[in-house]
Image (cartoon, rainbow, N blue to C red; front, side, top):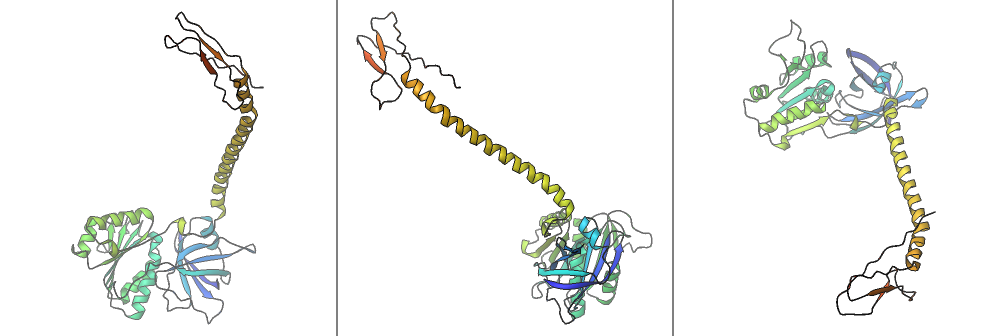
Amino acid sequence: MNDYVLKNIDWMTKDSVKMVLSPKDPSYKMIFFPGQYFALGFKKSGRPSPVRCFSIASSPNSSEITVGMRVSGSFTKTISKLTNGDAIFVYGPFGNFVIDEEVDNNIIMFAGGIGITPYISMINYLSEEGLKVPVTLIFGVRSTDNIPFYKDLSELEAKNKFLRIFYVVADNIAPNMNPNKFIKGFVSGELIDSITAKNYNPYTYFICGPKGFKDNIINLLEKRNVPTGNIITEEFTPSTQLGTDAEQEKKLIPKYTYLASALTFGLGTLFFMAIDLVRYVPKITNAQTTSTPVTQTDNSSSTTTVTPSTDNSSTSQPAQQNTTTTTPQQTYYQAPTTRAS
């Protein structure tokens, strides 16, 4: 765990913030690869909060850490209300959503919503190091007034001639936006065909965003026979989170309570069934071995008499004695009736 303090927090859009964290020890700098993420927590009323994972937006060259997050759940709503100087606890880094400089020499990035965050770190690093890696960013957003890191992306595109950005806007496009950069709708196969000129293999495809966004892009690439090894994915889901916030706990407690109740009921039923078997099986067995046999005679020339066995080691089946053997004789046996008390 590393100790940081909140240096600054800015609202990038109506539902997303950018936080800058400074190490408590000025000489410390986290070592990470562009595109990795870390786990973040804080103290609330003197108690440690749950821990959540967020991608790093800053370059590894900086001692400060920048993170972007969409404010939606109780954790992000609480952390967005922290003030400068508040303590932040950082664990990590984690993840392998990173660029291999020896292999990834022509990159297409697909970002959905706040999934843009790790790409900010990657592009920052490539620009700072002067690496001549062509990068095409396709950024899916809802509207042009809700684009996380839009200012940062504009500045990066202005100073990095190897970077080009396309915004695919689902809803509203402001009238003053460049129609060559802002495309109405959703990411399509036609857009991929246009960018690659239908020569798909030279590229490494990075995909980061919600599950539906990620699955759609993978499907489009697979239809174009893009090798699986050329597709690198990162999915923003609760499964990457550590700890549980209050809202999730409320959902989990009834679930586990019902499960525990069902298990208790089932075990209790089995216990009482076992007791009943221990109590009643000996009674039934004893009744079968001591009951009075039934003798039945038909109109044939042969009579069969059934008598109980006198051998204590025998089972409850009666022994048979045939008084005549002129014709086969059928034997009937009526089981005794026993009432369990």
